[in-house]
Amino acid sequence: MVQKILIANRGEIAVRIIRSCKQLGIETVAVYSTADKDALHVHLADEAVCIGKASPTDSYLNMENILSAAINTGAEAIHPGFGFLSEQTKFAELCESCGITFIGPNAKTIRKMGDKSMAKRLMKEAGVPLVPGSAEEVSLNEGKQLAKEIGCPLLIKASAGGGGRGMRVVRSIDQFDKAYHAAKQEAKAAFGHDGVYIEKLIENPKHIEVQILADKYKNVRHLGERDCSIQRRNQKVVEEAPSSEPLTLKAQMYEAAIKAAKAVDYENAGTVEFIVKDGTFYFIEMNTRIQVEHPVTEMITGIDIVKEQIRIASGEEISFSQEDISFSGHAIEVRLNAENPKHDFRPSPGVVKLFHMPQGLGIRMDSMLYTDYEIPPYYDSMVGKLIVHGRDRLDAIRILRGALEELVIEGVDTNQYFLMMILMQDAFVKGDIDTGFIEKHIERLLNYET
Ligand code: ADP
Image (cartoon, rainbow, N blue to C red; front, side):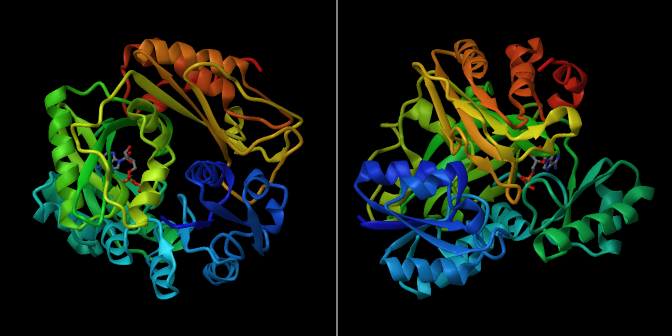
């Protein structure tokens, strides 16, 4: 097994990775920007190296400085976490050429899956069901022609897309040109590549994804699925495992996810994402990295996914068979953001005057907060995740409500009450959820007093 790992990330995921490394007896190197010198991941790691100024391009996206830090500290491997460099082919290639193990799939696989239209082509060949639409990037005229064939409503999506950006809904064909140019423009600004493709819009589907682990020896396991349907602007807010889909449908999704992984000789942890509507599922994309919501899978399987990533990257064979994996109870995660939901979810950086973390059986909090910590304004507003595990879904909902009630974050605005309002809705308790849930219930969800 590798002996020393550099974590090329910040925030709660850097903290979470360091914790697993410690449990495996692996030394850790944190990297940090000048804005993060007092961050928790810097305190927890065995060594820490400043890699640049606050702006992500100067620091957490600065490949040269991160690789120099790894070489200078003798780190044999780099864990990229999620976001930042985690899905950048060039970074994985540079690690390979510097003789540093990139904890993730190889550069070729990242390239194939990172280009969503290429991923769709590969999945089509592998027999994985796709949303009707184009598997190729389309020009304005090709797109419009296809739009007429498949019919509105449809979605124009960026090939390089992520985080719900570069996506536009077209409800009637006369909106097509405007939406096409807008999607291209947004994609260019966000990802530097403006290729777009077209998909039928599946109205208010469920988002269900399958967690995969695969090693160098062609062993592929699935760790079950997560329901991530509670989203705001195509970004996940609440995630849970297992989903309430029928067992036969789940089995088909597991099979498709394994097929998808095998089709690209996948290695390490990955997630195959589907949307589900009226008993039919469609592949949308594969994420070639650890995901924010991985803890709900860990809670119901007892498998530490980060440890497995490290073992796989060290060349070990997965030590359990598919039959060895069992699922117990129900887990739910909520994403805590420093933001003000009542002011259009405006980010709220600043000093955390008091932080109290809820505790008790079945409660886990992955966070980088501590009392007097100053949340910098330069990065994502997510400051942690509260994850609970209960006997069944209702038990998990009750544990999570209690934990959210106990949580104290003073000094900055957070979405704590907004999350509580989601958990209080009858529709949520009944499991009546889809990707339109937040939009549909928004007035009630914002109707709280702080
Ligand atoms: P990103 O990589 O930007 O997150 P995804 O392709 O994973 O984009 O889609 C994000 C979310 O957008 C999905 O979870 C779903 O809610 C919605 N979505 C994506 N494709 C479709 C579609 N064809 N029809 C309806 N909703 C979709």
